[in-house]
Length: 377
Image (tube, rainbow, N blue to C red; front, top):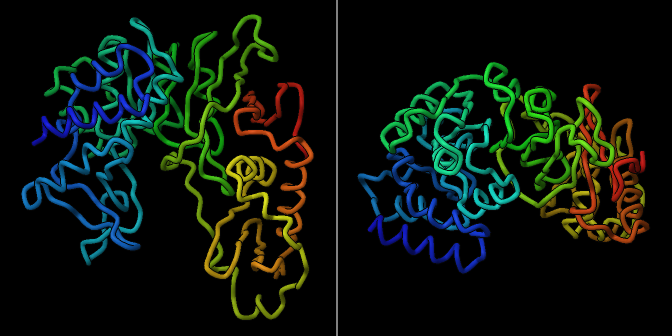
């Protein structure tokens, strides 16, 4: 059954146009996903993750492993699920095949490239990179000791014993193996760690899923100090956003939504009523949502049954369908979100791919179309 599902997944990915380079389909077929997945995966059931055992339900387990466009969750709650045996948050997975090969296409590793992978997970992605670049050219970092040990074992069993697996914080990189041609993260970041820039070779690339509190999807591709690149200087990295992906955040950059703490009966009574009309309707576009995330750092946004919520910086807002806003705290978040949506419209409704990111020793900044441009503050 596994061989059949493996071949079917390859055909499905081929049909979706995922294998954009000739080596990719061969790599997918030569590196079986099931060899890297533990005997239990976790499947979302309502609001909880429930275990699916390979021994008890081999078909469901196998179909989860070989789903072409979905990840298979291999750990919940940092390895400590609750007493009920269910989990609340996925904390490690084998990434969806379509996402993995899209990122590999963006990174474009070549034979002989030196690669630093952030977030080993099961080790499957590291094995794909090893087949492309050479085993000794791949270093992968995993913060969870058990996950790192299991990945090391799986890589050795799959014929990749020379891939270097480091147990450590991926945000710090691995300086002793630098410089790297490519830094590829399988965890999303709010802020690109400067250590990655410092450990990349001149002209090298950083490819990482990117997230904001407002908008979870993004993919950054940065070039490090490339000679002749517009805006690139020594010690900087910059580039356009290359796609829209949603990944678990880097563990060092996890954030907590404080709405349960801030939204109280007293806060509701104290909240300010205002009218924003349909000004937030534009945020129904994923491109507008992405832009708003850059303009409103640290502000979370989600849609509930009762309207659109915003929360951050000690403030919250609820915007109902009829455009009535209830706002509380030092900031008027509904008004700020409306201004961000209006700015996006004035700029000609740019797509995500028109925005860019520059990372320096002093931090990071975003721009639209030109590296020297700045966004509305």
